[in-house]
Length: 196
View 1 (cartoon, rainbow, N blue to C red):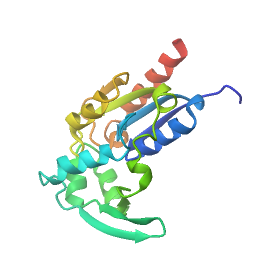
View 2 (cartoon, rainbow, N blue to C red; view 1 turned 120 degrees about the vertical axis):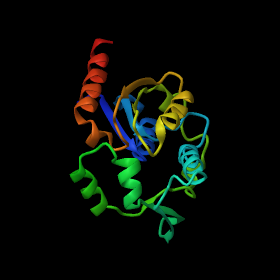
View 3 (cartoon, one colour; view 1 turned 30 degrees about the horizontal axis):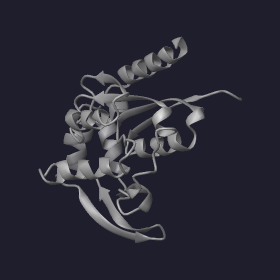
């Protein structure tokens, strides 16, 4: 109904979609929760978080058995990443139940990084008036072996008003490795909105 607002949650690369929704519909979003997610900031292009992740992981060989796949389709040229089974086991799902890792391995598909998309390069896309006006909460997955706690805190540093929740023992698949703790954090965030 009129006046109702949502709490949106984004995970991993989904944080970029979350940012676009915040920019477009700031009055409809009560809070945005970035759960071990890419979180762009006002004044920088949205691809900066993906570029930094790729710089930190590629230069150190942290992408392990992942494959980079050039793509060229009706949406344009780009690069997709295919997560390797060892990478998933050691960097994404190392704290998750084995059945979640097995399912993830079966469902792997190339994931477009959208690095050549003009929207990703537009430093003026996210504004203070829209994206910057929405309450942001970053959920740090403290055992994330892919983007690491350091990388997650690097993103928070560029959005100083962002609140932080931490979940010890959470790998990148935070909803698999620590579902109860993630649920508790989301309830806490919702309750804090209701008391404001």
